[in-house]
Amino acid sequence: MALTELDDGTVRSMEIGAVFSDFVGKINSLDFHRKDDLLVTASEDDSVRLYDIANARLLKTTFHKKHGADRICFTHHPSSVICSSRYNLDTTGESLRYLSMYDNRCLRYFKGHKERVVSLCMSPINDSFMSGSLDHSVRIWDLRVNACQGILRLRGRPTVAYDQQGLVFAVAMEGGAIKLFDSRSYDKGPFDTFLVGGDMAEVFDIKFSNDGKSMLLTTTNNNIYVLDAYGGEKQCGFSLEPSPNTTIEATFTPDGQYVVSGSGDGTLHAWNINKRTEVASWSSHIGVASCLKWAPRRVMFVAASTVLTFWIPNTSKSTGESGMEFEARSQGEHLSQ
Image 1 (cartoon, rainbow, N blue to C red):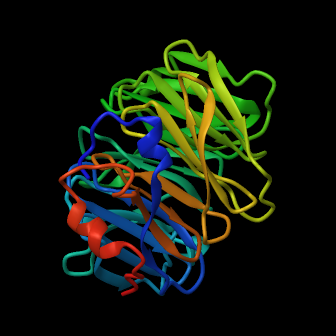
Image 2: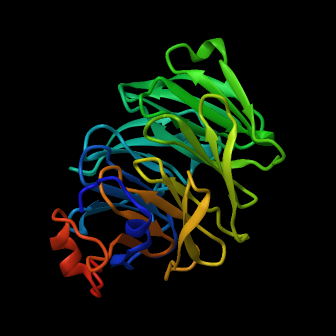
C-alpha cells in the first residue's frame, strides 16, 4: 500500500503480514533504505540480512563471525551498509565497516572507537555518517576516507541523529540534554541545547520527523517524548512498561502525525501526536520488540526481537491498490525463508 495521509483507522488496522523466524538470537538493529523498498537487519547470530519489503522476501544473508553485527544503517547505495562490530574492538580497533551486500566485501574499515557503538546514522545528503559509542565519543566520518573527520567528547551514552535535510544533527547525552549542531560547522560547538525537563535518564534513541519540526526521544527509563525541534518544548510524552533487559525503540510515521513504540510487556502502541491520545494497542506476538521502524514510503512498519515481523494494514479495513499483492499472499502465511 502506497503511503498517503494516514488516519486513525488505517493505523488501527495494522497487523502482521509476514514473519521471519530463522534468526538465532536477538536482532540488534535494522534500517530501511530511503528510496528503495529495502530493509537490512543485523543480529546476534552475526548475520546481516537484506529484504525486499514490497514482496516480503529475503534477498541475501551474509555472516560476519570475526566482527559480529551490531548497529547497522544503509548508505545511499541500495546494496551498501555501514555495520558496527561486536567483537575484537580492543584488539583490532575496527569498530565500523563499510560493507557491500552485493559481493559480500568489506570496502573499508573505520578505526577509532574503543568500545561498542550504540548509535549510528548516515547523512541524508552526502557521504558523511556519525557514530556514538560507550567510549563517550561521537565520531564523524566520510565513507571515502579511513580517518575520522571529527570527534565530540561527551559525558554518558551518546545518541546521534541527522535531520532529514542533513543540515542539522542532534546529540543526546547524560542528564537528558540534547545539543543541536550545524553539520557544516559542528566544530564551532552546538548552536542550541535543550533539556528534557524533569527526566534525567539517558536517551536511548533520538529521531527527527520527516518535516524536521519534531524530535522523538526514547529514554532508558521507558519514557517517550516528542519535542519541538526548534524550541525544544515538550509536545507530548508517553510512559511504557519497563523492560529490564531490552531497550525499546519508537518510530514516527512518515507524515509525523503518529508515534509507534514497543513496550516491556510485549505490546505495541500507536499514539496520535496532535490529539495526544493512544489510537491502537497490539500484542507484538514476538515478546518485547527491541527494534521498531516505520518504512519511509509505505504504510508498513517492522518490529523485531528474535523474530522479524512486517506489519501492514488489514485489507478488509483499509483499501489501496499498491501493495495488495503482498497483503493477499501474506495473510495468515508465515513467510520464513
